[in-house]
Length: 324
Image (cartoon, rainbow, N blue to C red; front, side, top):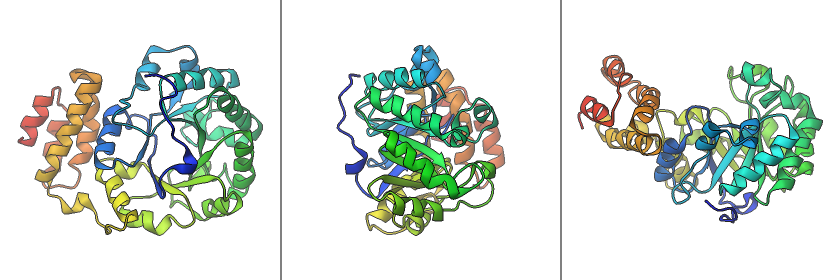
């Protein structure tokens, strides 16, 4: 994939933006391609990738960045780290791979990530955070964005922190409506995200957190440029399409609830087939086990079906168990 193959810009992306959040162990190529089949206008992100590994062309990390330019655009690669020189090198690698944009993770609350001064920890070091944005943005011509949280333990720092990131070269911000100290507990608070948009009206601001049905997206879009949905799509990839339909005035509905499980099976098997295509049968089906467990959640006989699906080794195994 050659660089310079994209003309994507956050400022001209179709509004309201619908983005699939980067999720470790979830948003691989097969999942992104499934989402794009259901919601072609969605913007998809990679799993978060280490700038240290990218700077040294780590084989595993490079493989995780692989994407299909015909099926996945706009495609954003999310990176994390803390060394400016590695951000500069990694950004160049991402651009050369043909991605449409680079996103910097400043929101992950995982203890392992934060203890290394990555992810949410950068909220406490705004000078370093800005330096990382500057290093990445000066290295490439594709847009650089940031995904972050309301703050470390107070949302009062959100506007000055984000203003600094924009001044350093970030062109868009996705904000999860929780503090670092909240982790994933309680309810997401979007009020500070609306205030951020008021303070930075020319900047693309995307809200994230607790979008579980299309009505949630309509209720929370407010003055924002778009929404980002993550965990709500697991076991329900139709959510992105439902949200796009709602924003387009095609009605508010829940495809997951209106479909019978039998009607979902072709989509589930398509996801399996994409996983096999992108990772090989053994690895692809091994990683599909978690998705399969989510797909059957809540249906009659789910416990027994899940017990069989989490042992699948081949695509044919999945077909037989699902009766296809």
